[in-house]
Length: 171
Picture 1 (cartoon, rainbow, N blue to C red):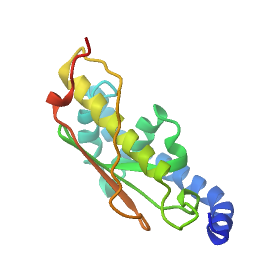
Picture 2 (picture 1 turned 30 degrees about the vertical axis):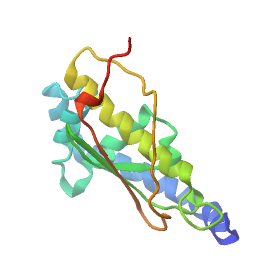
Picture 3 (picture 1 turned 45 degrees about the vertical axis):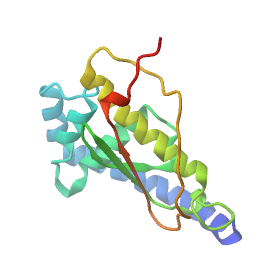
C-alpha cells in the first residue's frame, strides 16, 4: 500500500464505517414497508431472489443497500470489502464495490483478494437463490475461478450468470 493510500485508509475508515452504518439504517427505515410486504408474501430469507425483487422497488435505490446488509449478515467478511448487489434475478447477479484506500495493493489498484471476495460473495448469493428455486437442494462450492482482465483503479463490477444445469449432483 502506498503511503498516501495507507494514510487515507487510516483517516477515512471510521467515517466510511459510520456512513455504511447510517446508510443501512436509513435504508431499513425507508424500506420498512417493502420489507414487511416481502415477508408477508413469503419472500424472505428463504427466497433470496424474490426478496430482492420486492426490495428493489423501494425509493432512491435504498432496497439494494438493505438487501446487501441482510445478506452480509450471512457473510461477515463483506463488512470490510462492502460490495453492493445491484441486480439479482434467477439467471444473473451483479455487484459493485467502491475502491476504498484499504482495498488497494502497493500498485494503487484494487487488491486481488478484495475482488475475489466480491466474486465469492455474489456467487454465494446467486447459488442460494438457485438452490431455493430448485427446492430441497443444498450445496457447497467446490471450485471458484476468477479472471482478471485488467487492473481495477475505480469502482469494481462483478457479473455472475448462472444456469441451473451447472449444478451437478455429487455422487
